[in-house]
Image (tube, rainbow, N blue to C red; front, side):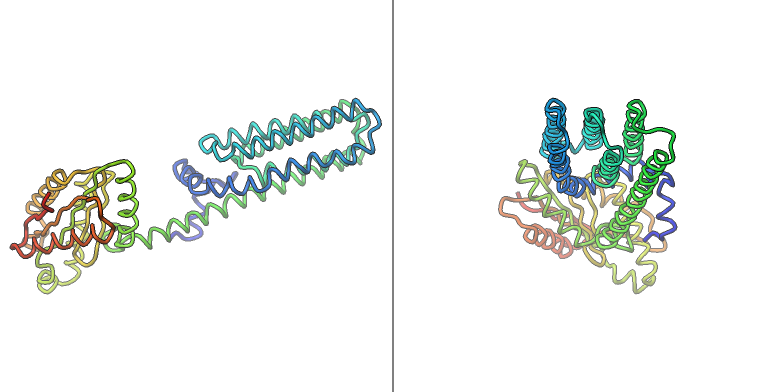
Length: 372
């Protein structure tokens, strides 16, 4: 597992996001559903709170025309929030763009609201500005750069409108408002950056633990637990889309004698080299698993049995012509089968095991397949 120091090196000092774009994409894919669920929990609350502030407006604003405009702005923002809430789960590929559009609309509504008041109270409206900044940084899903840009855009426009309407001046009180807003902005930016780092550190640790739990430490191949998980998924997928699915189980012949004669370290080197050799032969969507000891399984999605048999022969030929010095020669016994209608994870694997055992009984270094 990576040390904390190594983990931190993967982060951008400015944004707290991964420097590696592929790693950042993997993180977003991993966090996508949780991010959407988290945002949806708060977005309607945010929209309703924005609307509820019409209650004090109703008692404070005497001009009915201004009151209607303010109400329309608030109700429109709530409707936009509802649309964002409803469509968010379907915008997974454009999540940041969708959020940026929503936030931009919210910024325009906040400016319009500020302009609509005849005699706005700058302190009260500044609190609304701060709430929006908090929402941008801590609630709505977006990249760090977009959050910073939108917050600066919102704040600059807010104080520009205030200056045009002569609500603020060069007085110390106005400077205090601007300074306080800047402090809130910096605090939110720092908090968002820290959250980015912590989430990505947790993601890396989780991935490392998953690798440890599903990978054979000696050969680097997937282990038996991972095989059971993948086979179950592939069986479901094969039946749903009417696809073929095959498997090859092979066992090193006379491996105990190799360990006895050359020692376990040499035996381990043979397993490592064998695993590396097989990975170089199979396709990218095929997977190699160490079933246990000197037994391995190759899972072959979308593959008919005849093709699986040809692959087994190819592996057999490679082994027969590969130098495993100091071991004189390495051979394997192969069992090959394909998915049948009533198969489960256990029945498929048991059949592979029985076929491989038959290959052993037939004299080893041979291939036995399921009779079709």
